Structures are given as C-alpha cells and as structure tokens.
Length: 395
Image (cartoon, rainbow, N blue to C red; front, side, top):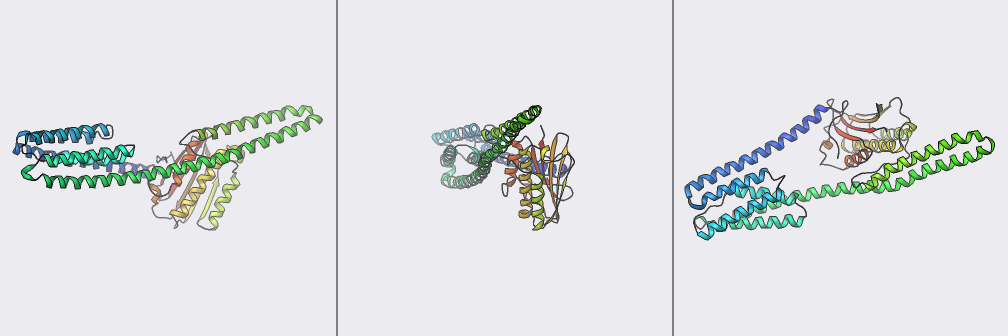
C-alpha cells in the first residue's frame, strides 16, 4: 500500500493530512446521516405503532435492532444481519398467524437494505453473500405480505422488492469494482515476483562471477607473492557474505506472498541516463546527487529499486501531467537512510492522489520499496507540485 503520510520534510504534511481528514469527516458525516435517517424512520414506526396498537409495537423493536446492527455492521456483519432477519421474520409470522393489522417497518426495512449492500460487497465467498441477500429478499417479501395493512400487502411487497433489487444492484456493483481492484493489484504483485525470480539469477551470477575471478587471481598471486593471498581470501569471503545477504533478502521476498521485486545491477549512470532520455522528449529534469552517494555505497537491490521508482515517477509525469514545466530529482543520504524525491511543477492537480483510482504504478513502486523495509509516499506539496518520496534504510 502506498503510505500517504508525509515525511518530516519535503512532501507537504498539511496538504496530505487535510485530504485524509476530509475523507475521514465525509465518512463520519455519511454514517451520522444514515443513522439519523434510520432514527427518523424509527420515530415514524413508533407513531404508527401507537395508532395501530396490538402487535404493531413489535415493529419498532425490530427497527431498533436494525439500527444497532447497522452501527455494528463492520464488526458483526453477518451476525447482525442474521439477528435482524430472524427478528423481522418472526414478527411477520406472528402478525400473519394471528391475522391482525400490521404495517411493515420503515426503519427495519431500511436497515435490511443497508446491510444487504454491505453483505454483497464484503462477505466471502460470493456464494454466501448471494445466499444471504436472497434470504433477505424473502424476509422483506414476508414483511410486506404477512403484515397486510387493509389488503395493501401486494403493494408493500412490490415496493420492498424494488428496494431490495436496488440494494442488490448497488452491492453487486461495489463488489465487482472491489474485486477488479484486488485482481489488478495481485497481477502487479505476480509480475513483480516473476521479475524478481529472473533477476535473482542475474544477482547470483554477478556475485559468483566476482568470487570466481578473485579466486583465480588469488591462485595466480600465491605462486609469486604468497603474502598477498590472505587479503585476497578476505575479499573472497566478503564477496560471499555480500552475495548471501543479498540473496537472502531477495529470496525472503519470493517467499512472502505480498512482497515485490528489485532489479540488481543498476548504477548512478543509469539514473542519469534515465533523466537525460526523459528530458530529450519532455520537460527538463534537474538531477542532484548528494554527498556520499556512490555505486558502492548503496546495496544493489536499493540502487535498482531507486531506478524503478524514478522510472515509474517520470512515466507518470508524462502520462498524467503532460503540462509539467519541469521536474526535480533529488537523491541524498540522511543519517542511515537514502532518500529519493521526484517533483513535477507547472501541471494541474494530479489525479493520482487517490490510491484507489487510475493505474497501478504506485502499487508496484510501493511493493518494491516496502520489500526493502522502506516507505513510499506520494501526494501534493504546499508549493503546488506533485511529489513521490522513497526512503530506504541502509543496514
């Protein structure tokens, strides 16, 4: 997942924080509005119960149970749904068996429809979700048919069926969109893992080749200068340790289901070449490398993940912000971390702010960065730029 929390400097914490607070309050207000609407319906049910008398007083009880089930739906989705359906069906059967005047409950029905949407969207497997929604339809039909208020059961049943069909359509559509998103993310992850499997071979070949070359050199030196053998053996041992460390990190990613890949063998020259090629066919790019950054100073998997993040960031600039005036790329060491920032200026608001929309480039980048124990942030800055920030620990 792309972390939208801003770092201590660079990416504007105010802009991203304001966006998260806005989304939070929209959800809270929507929840409050929904509960308020159901509460108003419950008051209507109470008024009807007072006027009708008899067993109609059980209908507001079902409405209250429905409101509680809606409030607790994220924690007890299936349990609350089942309790509400059992309560509603029991009241309908009781009113129908005694043959007294009854009216369907508006709060009760509204809660059932809201829970139906949630069940179809979130409950797995989909067969269970579909079964529960069909049971809910039966409960609603029983509510309309058995609480036959002055022969209006057919009309009530028709209205409740329309409501259920609408809720089922909304829930099914949300389920479809969610599964498309999940499948797309899984496709990105599988692609990254397959790439890692190929690149692991390159990494092993690179290290083993170096070890073989140093071993051959040590054998040659031993015949003419025996005292130089010990340093050569130390170099071979260090190369072996480095190879094992890198391979363990990459293999651990292959074994982890939700991790992604890196590409070994990239250098600073490749990063500069990438920015130069981008500048040749698009906005200008300024690339600054801080002190202490060198090919040997960074692990190969970190260096090549930086290359991937830079490549994807520049590709997104070309794809999503064609009106960009210029791009700033900054690579620096900070304490025991290396940080890469890519900023583009002079473009309209970037639609990539929503991590649930658009393409999946940020997903792939985040998978690679997090696989190395780092973090990836993306969002607007107070200066009006879009910034991608990647940070890796150096251990």
